[in-house]
Length: 253
Image (cartoon, rainbow, N blue to C red):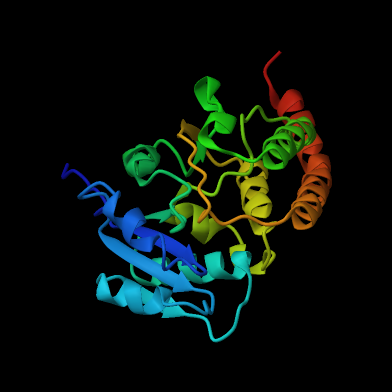
């Protein structure tokens, strides 16, 4: 019997950009050679020279006609990556906050077919984000919300608010990501979809690097994001409880 040919790998690294002119070139320069088959930057109506620089660097660019929000930017990233034929899609912030050298470790489980969704955790393997410059309010906000969300979802992740991720094509084709928020809570909604949907999710330990150029939302918006994230997990917790009851009933005695 003839063996089935493996699906060709095509990895698209997506860069959701807003005012990234000062850090974009460093980010791309730190990406290990051979990691990406295609670089795609989506600019959310930046008022600086992000778009011009990206084009000079040879990056494929999409531009929003107005600022639509972080979640909307990701939607465009993923939709366009799928249209390009991506089998693995990476989310890499172009503000140099997340170390691009960690991208191969994120992609490897996707390419190997052992994960549908991977994300970089700054807290895994006894990681200390404070040593990498994470602001105090973000550190404790992340810790508190991660504990609360794990309790609601019945999960054991070390971090639930990473901005560095990789996904399989199958994952995106199985969830309604276009219906999720256009704001920051998009990140929580997509992780909750993975958990509730029973997808294979893996954490990958990554270093933390905060500089004055690193993008960040203010304390007020951070608190709003935490509140909305916990609300999303609370709504999903009922579904998770029903799933666990069904699994318990179906388990052989």
